[in-house]
Amino acid sequence: VVIEAVEGVLEDYARRGVAAFADWHAQRSRLRAKLAGLIGAPAESIGLTSNTTAGVIDIALCLNWRRGDRIVLFEGEFPANVTPWQQAARRHGLEIVFLPLGPYLSQPARALENLEDTLRAGARLVAVSAVQFQTGLRMPLDEIGAACQRHGAELFVDAIQACGAVPIDVRTASIDYLSCGGHKWLMGVEGTGLLYVAPDRIEALQPEVAGWLSHEDPVGFLLRGPGHLRYDRPVRKRTDFIEGGAYNALGLAALEAAVELITGLGVEAIFAHVQAYLDRLESGLVERGFRSQRSALDAGRSCILSVDPPGHDDAPRWVDALAARGISCSSPDGLLRFAPHWPNADDEVALVLEAIDAGLLSE
Ligand SMILES: Cc1ncc(COP(=O)(O)O)c(C=O)c1O
Image 1 (cartoon, rainbow, N blue to C red):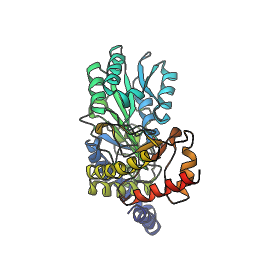
Image 2 (cartoon, rainbow, N blue to C red):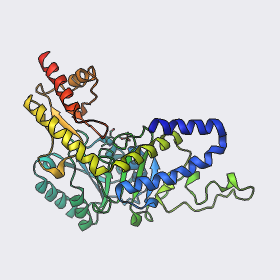
Image 3 (cartoon, rainbow, N blue to C red):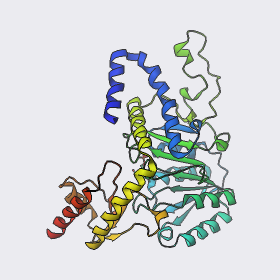
Image 4 (cartoon, protein in one colour):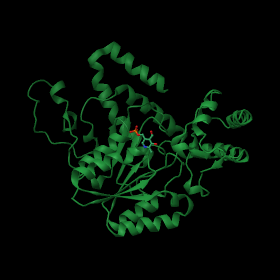
């Protein structure tokens, strides 16, 4: 459906030329509503982005920082959720505090106490991934959100390793901002994404990233004759003010098709399907001497299974060996990571384990 959607846009532009623009511009509102449905948000709280990083940068630029504000980050996070905060810290004189991620896997209650102590000492924002990219650890977002609320901190979530396969709800987790690229678990293509801003946070954002399409009635001067070209129209007080210019229409059509499919299957059902797949894969890999990084607690599990190979530094070699047998996985931060989704059938597990056996024999 993604391929058909992309071809559909190309064919439409080929046939109608610029006349196709208005329809594909309007597609953005349809897509925002569909993305909103995936995370329990109202449609007007969603803006479209070009990747996860773009959403982090938007918030890092638009927050009304006060000198000395503290930002809480995590040691081991994917850098997309670190660099823009470091740049904001440099520009505005902010302080960054790194907390360790390890305790969230081994002693989550202790980890949350540590966070609570840090927040008690004062923090403006906590930025965290919903699911950690290397271990697949699903963070206790509801508890982190509640702690932020108790201490007046804002919560920013990078959801690219969750959204589309792991249930996530911005309301139950009291999330203020959420950014997610469209090319991982949403199964769109690269160059698209979404940013959520909680309705009660939009007013305080400064429009530092506004462009020509950020105003109220931004395209009237192109469609409705003379007299509509003005520069004093207000910038929208909605998250889509971040959509300042022309966008990747092909990518957004791809994303809509992918999200429709995911919504049709249901994220809960996808999650359950992947857990059954990973249960079997995990036990097979552990039997063969791989050390699983998967949380012992259901609440800490995502759709990622990462393992430490028997020869500790060998993950990239395993990625190549498995790729040669048509099995696609990756080696983030030295772990061997499997990330199956709805198209991956249960009977693949036996094939993966056979490939592992062949690799172990050839060692
Ligand atoms: C947690 C996390 N955030 C962000 C990204 C990527 O960010 P972007 O969509 O900006 O390329 C990745 C992986 O590519 C990731 O694992």
